[in-house]
Length: 160
Image (cartoon, rainbow, N blue to C red):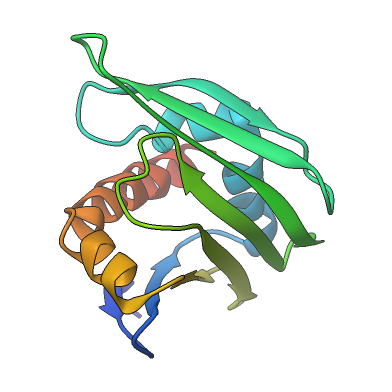
């Protein structure tokens, strides 16, 4: 069977973005890559040449996370949130707020990890406070950024 690595982006409602992709790795490994800072720093880095300079994760309900990306020129982009649900290795639900507030309000993201044997389907659903916020996120280049990051994640998973 030929692996499918196609990123699928849909808008199930006027406030949601849903992103789906399959990975050739067991669910436990994909979940670890998503939740361990030392692994996130290797793939969740944003645009080329950026780094995930700060990656703090308190992986428990009520725990917080903090990400800070840094460009070679020193420009920074930060995001933080609180975990609302943590079901290892199946599901994460958390709030999301960027330091720069490039879309209005907060968002809530749900990531599911579906076991397909030696493969895992990751689905991210982000619910924004308004259609306007969702549309700003869609127009931001988010799809290209997620695609690049997921390609890096696939490469990391192949090495482990």
